[in-house]
Image: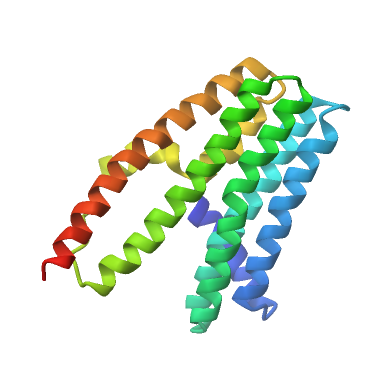
Length: 208
């Protein structure tokens, strides 16, 4: 669904002659607008804070896909654009969890705040592992491990887009906490299995 929405954004920005890098910047602006709304609206209405944050984060996430689609549409893919995209992602991923940690602290839930902070570390480590590991694998010309359709569904809890919509549960805090912790457990499991796969791939590359 994210890619389908991103196509609409890519078509719009293509029509107005925007650059992919500009879309990347707009994407991170929406992300931080969502996080700011999350922290500022809580005292007024937790339900509104959750829904506003989910919508803004989802738009930012879709725009994060749209920049690459726009680059391919315009034939303007570049190393600079890829660097900018990955740099902003490296900021975006832990920022979401740190905002949740701050919200937990504001609600007096210190243990959950620590868990969210640890989730931010996990998100950063996973992002680095996937991207640097993939780069090293490709440089070593190691064959990619095929991801089957069923595996894609299993990995759905690790998709940042899922986390965007979990915010709609913030108005019912126990549900949000349960969903968030389940996502954390799923991401820990994914990190373990993904790291093992990367390690085997890179070991194969080092033997060639």
